[in-house]
Image (cartoon, rainbow over all chains, first blue to last red; front, side):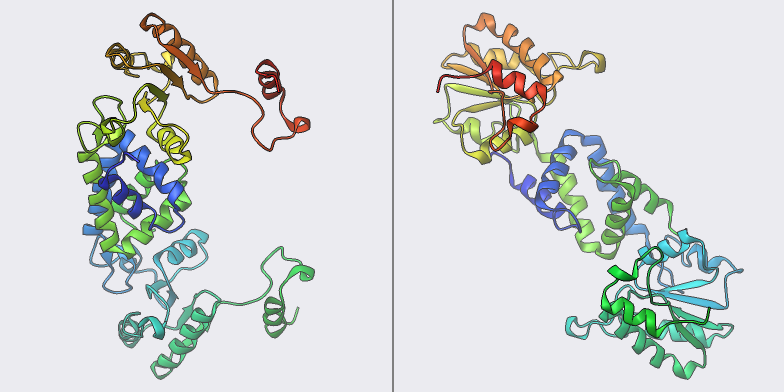
Length: 196
Length: 196
C-alpha cells in the first residue's frame, strides 16, 4: 500500500459508522479525496452540527435552540410520547399520527453497560409531569427485551405521578400472514386480541 | 420536524456521498450527533486527509510525501500499470500480482464533460517513459466504452515513445458458464481464444 497514515485514519473512522464496512469506507475515502471541496464542506458541516445542535431543555430532542420546535408549539400538550432516539421521534412525526410532545431517552436501560435511569433523564421527565397538564405518557419503545425492561421501569417510576402510562400495541404487523408469523408475534397477537 | 438547518445541512452533505441515500444519511447524522467525540474526530480526519494527502509527483497516486511509497521502491521499475483511480491501484496491489509502478489517470477521457488528455496527465506519463528503463505500459482500465476509448487514445499517444503498450485480457471471468454469458463477453472470449 502506498497510502498514508492520514488515509488509513480516515478509512478507520468512516468504517466505525453504523452500516459502513471497510469496503464502503474505502470507497467514501477515495471519493472524498477526489472531491476536496465536498470533503471540506462535509467536515465543517459535521463540526458545525456537533457545535450548535444540543438537547432540548424540556424533552431532550435535538435542536439548535433552548427549546425544540415541538416544545415551542403551544398547541401540543396533554400527551408525552417517550422514545428512545431522535430517529424514533422523526419516524413518528413523519407518520403524522401524534399531536403531542415527546421525551427522548437517548438510550434504553442497560445496567450491565452502566446505563441507568439518570442517563435516560427520568428525573426531567418526572418534573415535566409534575408541572401538570399531562394526561397520558405513551411509551413508544422498541419491542425488544431492553425496550420492555425500560417500559416496565418507567411505568413504575411514574406511578406516583398519577398519570396514565400506556405502551404501543403489539401484534401482527399490517399485511402479515398468520402462517409465517413467529410464535412470539402470535402470542402477543393472541394476548392483545380485541372484540371486532 | 424539530431539527435544525445545521442538521439538514449535514444530512444533505452526507447523502451526496456515493451509495448513501437519504435514509442512511439520516441514520449517520443521528449517530454522529449521539457520538460527538467520534463526530469531531471524523471531521478532523477528513480535514486532515484533504490537507495532507495529494498526488504523487511521479505517478499521481495519493500520498502524503512528494513521491508515493511505490515510486520510492527502487525494486519496482520496468513496467507501468495505468489505472483510472487510486481504488483500482489498491485492488491490483491487494491481489499482489504486479511488481511494477503505476500511473493514475484520475478519470477517463470524456470530451463531452470536458475531460481531455491534460486532465489525465498524459504528458507526465510520456515524460516518465522518456526517462527510459520502461519496457511495458499495461493499460488496466475498465472494459467500458470510456475505458476502451481511453485505452485506444493512450496506445496512440504513446506509440512514438517506442514502448510496448498492452491491455488486460478480456473473456469469461473465472467460474462463469458459457450458457449464461452475454453475447459481448462471448464475442471477446472467442476473439481472444488461445492455443491450449
